[in-house]
Length: 584
Image 1 (tube, helix red, strand yellow):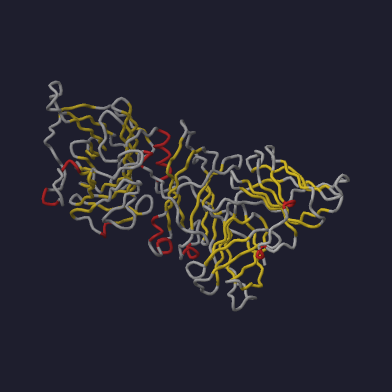
Image 2: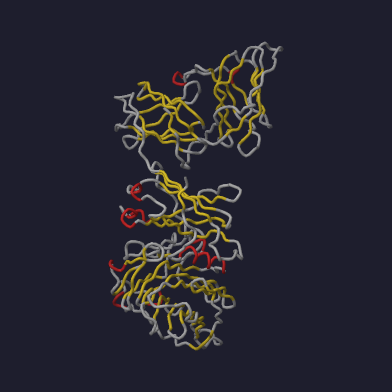
C-alpha cells in the first residue's frame, strides 16, 4: 500500500537522496580491459554545481543493513573535483548506487542498477536534500527501541517511540522506499511503501504489532487556497515597490468548509508565487485567533496574517492547511526590526490586550469602563467598543530586541507612522483617539476632522529653546460619517514630508505650528491608578472617544503612498483585497 506524503520543512541530519535514474542515465559499452563491469558517471548538486569529493558506493540487491556487514573496498570510491566517479571491480548483478556529499550533506540513491560482465554502465544524477517519515502507531507503545531499514541499501536508522505512538525516521532518500521496521530486534513483517520528496515529511498511520496485517489510513484535513494579488478593478498601478508588507487573508463561509476545521491541530503555510511559477520561501504567518477552541466553527471566519517578502500585482499568494503537520511556526509577521512598535488587532480578549509586534512587550491594560464585553465586530476580525470613560494604556518601555530598542517615543525630527480604523458614534464634539502625553496624539475635532499633533517641549537648559509648541495636520471632514468605519493613516519623515490618508483618499494637509501649553495633560490616568511611580508621560493611551476601534499599528518608519493604499485595500471590511479562492 502506498501513502503519499504531506509537506513540512524540518531540520534533520545531513543526508539526502533522489529516487530512480533519469531516462538517459544508463548506457552500455565494453570493458574488455578488465573483464569486469564498470560503473561510472557524473554527479551534481541540485544547484548545478559538481558534487566534488562525494562518497560513492554500490550496494548489492540482497544486502541486509541489519547484519552490519561491511562491503568490499572495491564497492566504494570518491568523486573528483568535477563530480566524476568510476568503479571497475564489482561483480555483475543488480545494485543500489548511493552517494553522499559531506560538505552539503546531500545524498543520492539510485536503485535497480543492473550491470553485466564486460559492460560499462553510466549513472549520472543529482544529489538532493533529505526527507523525513513520521509513523503514527495505532496502538500506544513506550520505551521501545526501533530500527528502520530500506532493503538492498545501507540505510539503517535507529529511533525510538515518543509520546507513546509516534516515531520519526529522518535522513531518508527521496523517492519510493520500502521501509522495514524492527521493534527491539523483533522483525515486523509489514513492509511500507512510502514516497518521500526532498526536504519534505511523509506521515502515515501504521498497524499495531498485534495485528500486523491491519493498515488504517490517517484521517486528516488538507486544503489549499490561492489569492491573486492583481489590484481590484478601477485601482491604478503601484507607484513603488513593496517589501515585507503584512497582508490579512480571510477565510469565510464562501471559501472554506469550517466543519472540516473544527479541530485546529495542523499547520498553516503561505508562499508567494510569481508570474513565471517560481515559489518563494515559506512566509511568516500568524493565526493567533485559532488558539480559541471552536473560533472558526462558531464565527465562520478566520483571519490569518502573512508577511509578504516582495509584492507584485502579477503574483499570487498560496495558503495551505494540513492537519498532519506540526502547528509550530514563526509568528514574526510584525517584527520590531521592520519598525512595528505596537500592533493591536483587539482579538478575542480585551484585557490584557496582546501586542502582535514581536518583542514589543506592550500588553494593553484596560482602564475605566472597558471590560470583557467591549469586543465587537471589527474591520479585520474583531474590534473593540469604547466610550469616553474607558481606555487602554501601556508603558513606554520594552524589552530590547537584538537589533533595536522598541518604545512608544518617537523623535520629533525623525520617523513616525500609524494606521487604524475608527468608527465614531457622534461628530459634534472633540475626542481623543490615542495619545502619548507631551509627545503626540490623534484627535477628532468637529471643524477639522482627524488631527495629528506632535508636541515640542521647551528645553530649559537651552537658552535658545524657550517656547513649547505643537505641529498639527488636519484631514478635513470629507469622508467622515458617524457610525461608519474610517481608515486613518499617517506617516512622517521629520516635518518636511508626510503621507496622510482617510480611507483611499490622500489628504493634502500642510503642517501648522502653534504655541502649546505643555502643562496640559489630557490623560485619564491619575497617580492613584498606577501601580508604580513612573510619571504620566510614560504611558501611551488609547481612549477618550465613544465608538469603535480596530487594527491599530504604530511604528517608527515612513510608509509611502503605495504601502498605505495597499493596507487600506487589504483591511477594508467589504470588497477587500486579496480574496482567497479554494484551489482544486
